[in-house]
Image (cartoon, rainbow over all chains, first blue to last red):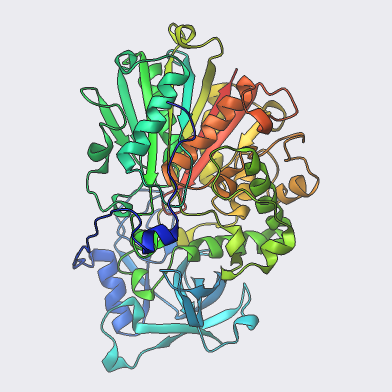
Length: 164
Length: 386
């Protein structure tokens, strides 16, 4: 057998069905249990609060919360309320969707270090109410919450973060 | 550290956007080419290791079993390993401990990926790597994590996009000499900077393509190596390490997990000063900035210093430390698990002086290949020498 063999097909071959292929659309439906730590986190979000945890041994304050410290490997039972403000650790301006289609309005995902957590401890969320050109690493941001009656214990109970 | 382990043969398919061949067929082409390259028959092989990425791409559950016959595993001890993008180099580490431990005398390592099956775009298969409760409801796409990491890396060390773009220019050009290459091209820094912005700062030409392809190697011990070849290449060190999956809690500017994996491999290989003792490197480059990020993690330069090596031309094929002489994932292509093994095979060919037009100028005695993956958290490293 020689090296570097394979038969390339073009996008046109595929679209025009120049070769045979079979298709299938999978229909998967999942319901994920929230778990102990994320359960508290979601309950907090429903009440307009960001909840973290504090390790009894190394005293790191972490978010998202977890019931174990992966460094000390001890049980964590100390849930602490953090602020709903923070600082942008890093961000991007996304012009495409997951299937590489152009977005009409770009999204600004960011890692946001939450005030009250140990330095460097952030969560993934979106930034809005700002000109994308103005977004900077280190920028102070604050959560914009959904109306209380609309909140349902999901990460999207925070609509986005905005500069303040 | 157990028996000495050698790579004695290597084979690979062409990397293409969409192959007519199935995954099984690609695995067969690569495995057979590897066996033929060293005059081995399937009966000479004691065990088979397969590396392949998520089943989601193929829509085939238990993909390892599905691919087994094409990978030459019929009636043999067989294991599929998977650490995301790090798989291609990790599979070599698995093959290494099969042989070093003395359990098996010979082993065939096959890495296959067929990403094109997933519709409408294989990127969708990556959505499920994000946390289902705390991240996925935000509507992420795979490029987010790379863009976030690239931005943090650039900001921390004051690196310019013009410098990073030079990686894409170099690798796509190197790939012009690789017979398996999918995206070889002569491009300029301006082309990269003017290409479509996908997720700022990531642009179209910063990214490796979606690919189908397969690679394979034959491994054996010090007693049998010369039955297969006059020029065995020794696996003198292997290492791997996993960082936390809470990736928003990590220092995104520096891949500490790559450093830990490299320290493990270097220690095994007796390397004290990697900058002086490594002649050629194939760090993982699914994005152009990752080559630089990983060179730093491999301790082949200081933190934030990789762009300068590139600007000075030191990482070209005729430089002091040739980096990705193959053309890397950016140029040759990125069929995930196969891409990592392609890097190991490139070092194998470079050390044997069989890289053809890609042969580096200096006489190389020792090289390192590295891959990276999972949720940006695993580092896998292999040191080869002749």
